Length: 284
Figure 1: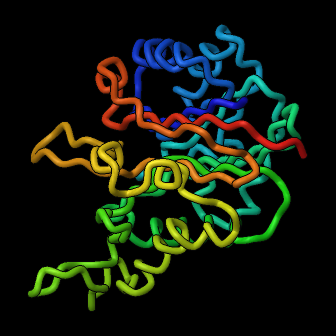
Figure 2: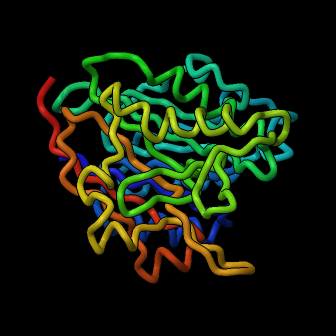
């Protein structure tokens, strides 16, 4: 069995990191994927995880110079694992902001498992970079492979999901009749059609390459749990909830559980809820 937790930790300080690591380790995961980690925080996380037996830790900063890590680029990814890991080059993804994607291969008893964790920039501040990041993720993962694969992280999308399974992207807007349609304008030089396609290719299109949304696969859209599904809560200003955090996985991993951890201790430590997935993989 492999238990993986993915979490946007929300720009923590040293004391909060200690509490976050304790909360994560109380769930007894084998793999932890974090988003919105700074280079300074990455070192603190690395030390804390090693105290908890996670000897294998990688972050997404090796290809970034100090001058790169500013204006929205100061936040990257980190993976801590009890399995040996090999970090893959971010150049393979084709993304311009290398720190937004971290890819590793885990050596497990059931064969190699690719883990890709991402933090897609928000569209209101980084429109073009958000779409280019989605396009790079799709280009990297829209391939046929026999390898176990997981894609997880904070995607800053979708805008909405309906009970009959429709996904509303941020390239869509409501018309006069109240129906969602692709907008006619553009944002940051990106047309609504391109915006919709980039988000939809990852959210729906990767299923053709055996990377399915595990939460929806297990819970559907009509169950009580599905209706209450959200991972981001706005703590400042008008209250709203979004399901921005996801875990996509190969069918060969036999995902058996996938839930958002919204218990009090997690909610106090970030404005995102962790997503926890449990796998019982086939041997490769």
